[in-house]
Image (cartoon, rainbow, N blue to C red; front, top):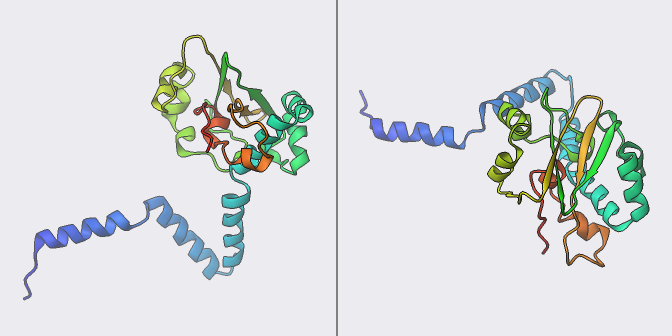
Length: 211
C-alpha cells in the first residue's frame, strides 16, 4: 500500500478549491454546457449575449447619458423631466427603463437609490445590478441610516449635505446624475463617459476622479 502525506493532500485540496469557480458559477456553467449539448442553444448565441451585457449593456450606457447631460443643457432638461423618453436618443429604451426617473446631485443634495422590496434596477442603462445592491443588509439599512452605509462605501458627507433616498419599484426606477467634476471643461462626451462610475449612478459614490 502506498503511503501518503496528509498535510500535502490537505493543501492540494485547499488549492483546488481556491482556484475553482464559486458554486453558482459552476452551476451556471453546467447548465450552459447541458443546454448546448442538448441543442437548445448554440454556444455562439450564449457568447453573444454575454458580450452584449458585458460590453454594450453595462454601466457605460448610463455613463453616456450622464456625459450628454453634462454637455447639453437641453438634453439635461429633458432627462430630468422624462428620463425614459430622453434616453431614447441613444436607443436604450427597454422594459427596465420605461419608467425611469433621473435625479441630480447638487453641492447641497446627494441622491441614493435602493429597492427595499426586491432589487428593481434599470439594467438596460446600468447593466446587471451588483450583488450588494440586491443584499438584504443594504436594502434594509440604507433607508434607516444612509450616512452610515455611505461611510462604509468610503463616502462621508458633511451634515450640510442632505441625503435623499429613492426607493425603486417595478414601475419606477432611478438614475443618479452626479455632479460634473471641476477641471473637465472642454472635455468630449467620450472622455467624460470614462470617468462616470456605476456606483455614482446608484449614489454610493460621489466625487468622481479625473485623470
